[in-house]
Length: 397
Image 1: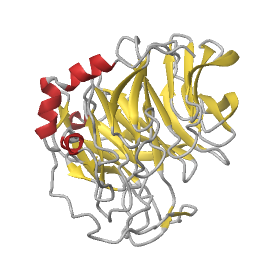
Image 2: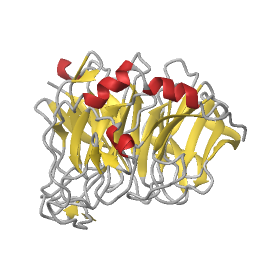
Image 3: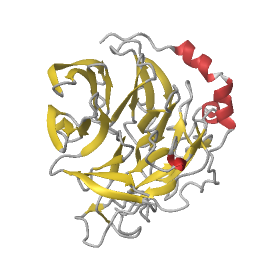
């Protein structure tokens, strides 16, 4: 693989920009004082997936309806995107995973025997698919909705198959740069490989590597705000500091920005389990834009641009919260909505779609939301890798 050297000077210049300095002092829009580290015990409280109880139902605001769009058996439906003919491309993140095309209620595998594929992006007839150790490009025929030929690796992530294994892809507004998010290998280990816990960008052929932002422990959701080159991410923060620490978040990515991991969190709050760290680096940590809550597990994000939903949702962000495991009282397992105005969040998250969690004090859940997709008619699709479903949310008034 050809790779240009890291654009250090460009990153340092960006780090000195007024915008970055402003974010250092700007607290999240829904800021509340954080609890002290270890204010509550660190609890391993994994969910148990159960069949949908007969009386359970998904809950949405008045005027919305939810129905089952598609059911799966062994697959793990996760990331979705639209193809040129409004077909759905879906990643099945299994160890023998696939990419599916869904059209007119039928799903067809077009790439098989992949290693936990997650992120995808499309530029012309080039379909980009990310696995834990590789980004490959396939030639996609929009007329037949099939892949022709084998994939070719354009970005090697060799040796990065452990730890957080989702790799998210997105093209900027004009398609000139491919962005890649890679999560950390561990909870808080120092001296991980420099590709870890960061957002990177490349030319479409995989050359021209630049690191855009660091200290992002696991930025799984990654989207550009519509009509701009403003990149937003949702981030899984660290574990084992207590029920509500450190909270997960969403934020606009400032080029050259450092977001704390592993030596700080949510601004310049020092990680107590690390000693003798660079205090100047800790102080340079940027605050995120919106706090989501402790260990809620934000996966995909989506900016709503349709007209089917009421006006309050247009331009706002939906966030898929996969659900907690490191809290005594379970939280997440829902879709949240964050209102936006002029490209920035104006308030914290509110519940939009929930009901998968039976109760905060119970282990049983019957679904875990992952991916989000706005359909051409303005309805919203949600993948659920716990219940192995795709759900559709529509507004009927």
